[in-house]
Length: 482
Ligand code: GDG
Image (cartoon, rainbow, N blue to C red):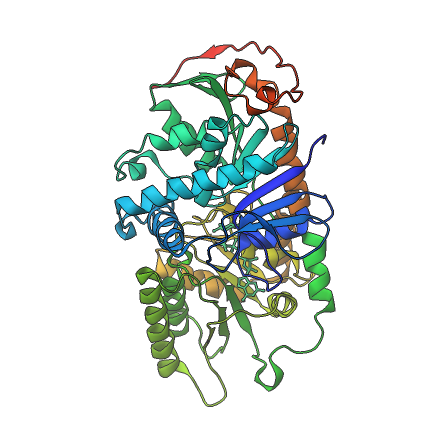
């Protein structure tokens, strides 16, 4: 790689670890590459320019969101419009024009800061739904560097986008990237569906889309975990994390407390399992669910619902020496988490919609291969596309999930071993180190696709810096299906 890697994400990783999948995945893979990570500091404040935080193997440059940006760009458009919309929860979308306005102005402001730092041979890797229009603004300023986007959450169906005042802006924003990375093939298909419905897009046989004067490539890059590092955490996590409260047999669930993760259905299914299938068996469900976005109303509601459900199920089934649901509403240290996963006879992932779900991969990674536990995995998590030998369930079907718990806890060793082997192959194939390499290789390979760009806004050629000669590319036309 000739230039530096510049990662841009909504949140800069700080010393105090966060529970988000993005930070977990990228912190490991950026270390040692000498790159730059640009992102918002967790504290809102008046600082308008980038400032360096911490030290380490790569530079971290932070900016601050103003109170109003935090409310309208972050909580508003990102988390009350895009997050529910992209997770098929249009009913939770809050449409306010101030949200969109500040989402756009923050992205424009950030593009100024990134353009100041970026050199023509750098690769700019933008992450997630908070920053969809960033490349559009960088191009407006003449930044010619290769820019890729990885979307960590599902790509929405065309019909879902239509609740926005102007759904056509997505095609416009996203076409300014050279590479659009999505989690799954199903996401890729939905993204292509959006472009097929757009008169301005033309399709080429190599998988690229021509939109105005640019080419964009859309491809799936299923994200994974740092497999070896996570296995080592489990190996070194000694001692009994439960102390005197060690459950005899338990199922684990680990999720940010988010309405997309299907937690109420999970608790209900566990209650139904206890009612219909347990027959004297006394497993516990250990649910770790650290809080996120608590100021958003939908998150407050689900927190209350879970407290009520766990209280009701425990009230009905608990014994003096057995608590059926242990619901822990705060983060647990990562090394302890690895050990807790290893001891669990099953892991429950019941997302109603989920980009990938790293918990599924973490659980499989730390199982003992000749006596593994069983992964019960929602069909609607991206992970289900590759981990087809998990016990796949429809999380809306409470009875099916309850039955799956019973099947998992009674599964013969031979079947557990075979299913685990198959799931582990998927975990290894998507190791986050490989994932990073694949994405960056594809972004580098997209060089030359700017051959059709007009280049008239090329900021770097304007200021006299060298820029590689555009490679002429011949394209074969493919009929648009719409
Ligand atoms: C987004 C997408 C996609 C959770 N609780 C604790 C804790 N965690 C860690 C888990 C895991 C991560 O957080 C959660 O990752 P997920 O993938 O399950 O979900 P999101 O946070 O929603 O992440 C998702 C991901 O981005 C990556 O692209 O897979 O679909 O929504 O690593 O272990 N970690 C610690 N304590 C906790 O209490 N230490």
